[in-house]
Image 1: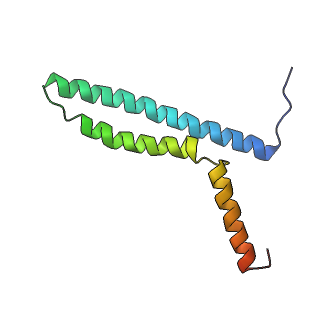
Image 2: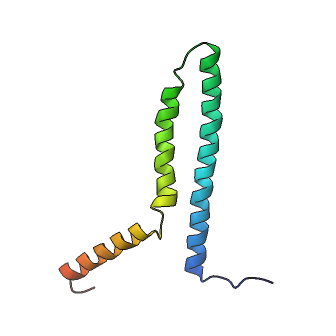
Length: 96
């Protein structure tokens, strides 16, 4: 049984979301691999400097995750902000 096809705009949005999520998971996998290697290297020399690149990059990964899962296209926050901007434009210029 084949599911009903989505309208083209919803299909594009679905593909965009899957691409964003895949990008995040790839970013997370690379983060884990690189930081594991840096930690092994640092600990093999009796040092603990690897926490600093892990923390900095971890913050970037967190922001990436929030962008993909928290404030992605179609999220409630983004929809409310978009509607707010539309209302402001309508109020300032009655052409729209």
